[in-house]
Length: 107
Length: 119
Image 1 (cartoon, rainbow over the protein chains, first blue to last red):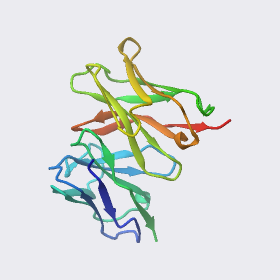
Image 2: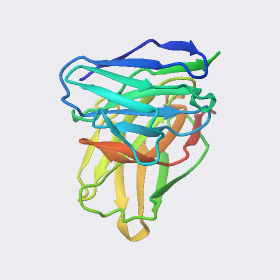
Image 3: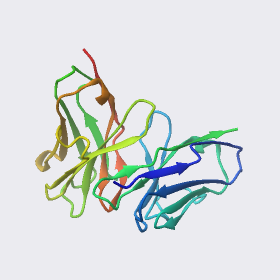
C-alpha cells in the first residue's frame, strides 16, 4: 500500500497569507497525485490533479507542485472561503489512498 | 456537466446488508476510460476508497473490505451500485459516489449520504 502523510495537520492563517501544505508518499508515485478541498458538510472538490494541473473552474491562487514522493499545495493569497480541510490522494496504485487531511483555519 | 446522486437507506441494522445506488446524469456511464467509485468518510475522519467499477464492468476493491463489498453497474439506468454485507457500527459513515479511479482523479462527486448502522 502507498501511504500518504500530510503536514501540517492543522494551520491557522490570516486572509492574504501564502499557505503551503506538504504531502509525502511512502513510495514514488510519479505525478499521480490530486488535491481536494472539503468544506464542512460537503463532498470533496478536486482542485489539482497530476500534481500540478489546475482543475477547470478552480481559482488560480491554488497551485501544486512535486513528483515522486514529495508534493506541495500552495494557496498564494488565502481567502475567507478557503477555510476547509485539504486532502491529497494518490491514484497510481491499485489501492487508492488519501492523506489524513490538513485543516485550514482562518485567523 | 456530470452529476451524481446517491440513494439508499439512512439506517441499517447490524449484520444486515447495505445497498446504495448512484445515478449518473449529464454524461454516459459507459464512456470509454471512466471509472466509477465509492468512497466513504467516517464521522469526523478522513476519506477511504471502497472500490470502483470500470466502464467495461471490471471491478477493484479495497482489500480491507474486499470480502464484504461488491460494485455493479446498470448502464440502462445510468446507475452503479454498492453492496456491503455484514454491517457493524464501524461502517457508519457518509458514503460518496464519484467518477474516478486508478490513474484518474475523482473529478465529480455525489453529495454523499449518511448511513448509520444501529439497532
